[in-house]
Image 1 (tube, helix red, strand yellow):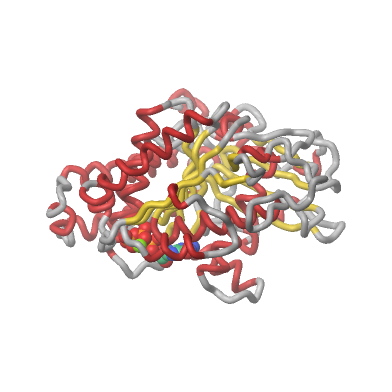
Image 2 (tube, rainbow, N blue to C red):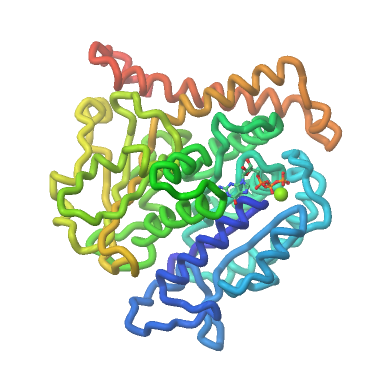
Length: 425
Ligand SMILES: Nc1nc2c(ncn2[C@@H]2O[C@H](COP(=O)(O)OP(=O)(O)OP(=O)(O)O)[C@@H](O)[C@H]2O)c(=O)[nH]1
Ligand SMILES: [Mg+2]
């Protein structure tokens, strides 16, 4: 049945995970008791995110974790969604915003508790596709525990897709520890994780400003979840082109480490819409720069509704001629969902495997180097068991990643590119 497990970690991850499940409930016409209220709604693939119990309730297949209790307590008393309390774990501690506490001491204790929930999900699933994880890269609990889970899944079953949906604080964080935490979690996200959709509070701020909505986490999380609802629509409903996590991985990742996606989505409410608008700031959920002539190595277009022409339609192409020449083929693909969203007739979503991520992480790399050169705050991490070597490795990983994007950007932006170099890739 192609099941997926939802995992929310730390304050940010729990909030987004909950909002995503709320919107899934709405899309599948489930009430707050997890019962179906519209029997006509297509429900064949409802098991992708839910397990049905003997009372015909569809309970979300999820796991929520935090090192301090307040977010989990809030989750358990909210009335919008029924979450199984046996899938929610917290400790009476907190991470003091330090990755090492999430990864080593307290985070390890929490892992023991949650492994049996995950194993249970694995065993009960017919054909588990993978895991969708939510967390902020800056949080100590979020980044540290996410790190452990990534390794756990890697060791348990390599065939399952791990899809991370982290929230970055690109350029606006005042908290130096967030820069370290982000660098640490970037390493397993690059080396082990299969897919990463990048969200950031700066991109979300811009969307709110342009649309006159107030800037707060609640609105940011709604926007993130709407985009995830669009991305997963083709997993959950039929259409002329079905999607799935494996398909996403196969089609969007020409080079295994370069798998960081820029998400966008737009609601179509006029007839003269253009697909290229989706690259405008008001639709982008992260702040990758747009100034590269050819920003995407590959991209997915997600269509939902009836207004779309057949999949071969040229009008839906975003032309990247030079890039196609370089890669040697047209590296975009589409998915389509015919069951409409309850509030919008037609929606287009976009996931681009973007070179813009290089410039984005450059900022983290610069700040990391400045702090680490002076060994600033390193004692906070080493006092909980972290080795200085891990700092060096994290820094090397970011710099390697930047340099792996480099030849791409070079080849795409300069027409006098020497094709003799192509063999390097
Ligand atoms: N979009 C969004 N960002 C959030 C939310 N909550 C926190 N953040 C951001 O996430 C970062 C902090 O991460 P948290 O999720 O609070 O940290 P944590 O994972 O609980 O880890 P601790 O450091 O142990 O508290 C900050 O940069 C916040 O701006 C949220 O609900 N939505
Ligand atoms: Mg927290």
